Length: 296
Image (cartoon, rainbow, N blue to C red; front, side):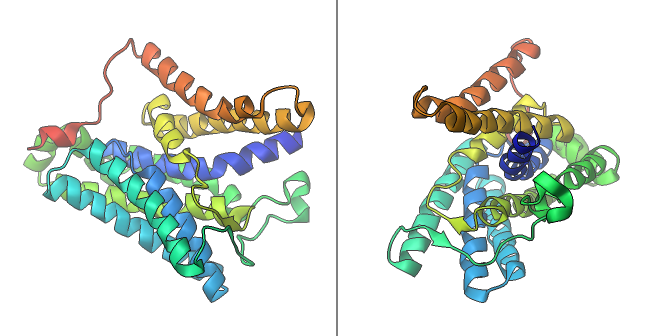
């Protein structure tokens, strides 16, 4: 049981960090479909820089810089160039996936897996069966709670919600919706960098092209499933991770008894099921979060 829980936390922590970035964007009125691109860009930057500088701190700073710049680019395209946020987010994902592939080829002249001697420190033997989990796993619930406080119990959170739901009303009391969205996306970029760093340096200590494998879209689905609430979205992300962990356990226990591809597809099937359940619980109501389109 402890081994399964450790596996769930290991698989779920990167997803939770990226989901929190999606929650911030949704609160600001933007459905963030660029999470996948930011996550893989953060993972790539963390591994390449940490390996070159032999420093975890340098890798994390590089990952944050890349993800914040990507978030600023998304904001520029949406707010200043008036692009559709869904298409802009998908474009950012394409840029992240293609850009990391190009970066690895440019540096190593191949698409081979890049390994790093540097990794996020582990919890250690004092934590027993959880010894191999990284410190970012331990920090994850703290980050979720801090984000809940920020969004639900502070003036910043109230202003951000106003900008997402009623931007004209927010502007009437002196709040700049564009500035608030930039802050939300930038903070989300930091969270995506943490998610990418945990994925690449938390347990694997490597980067391979396409290693996020749709986790950014699963995080986006978790935001919908969790109704945009930090705690609800975090539990939704962990639910998807439970399915992934059960799939891994099934592969180890059943071997060839079940098709390998079927077990790999379980997290994505759970994602579709979660979105469907979320829609049914809301009575089929259309999703909100397109306030930025009403702002012009």
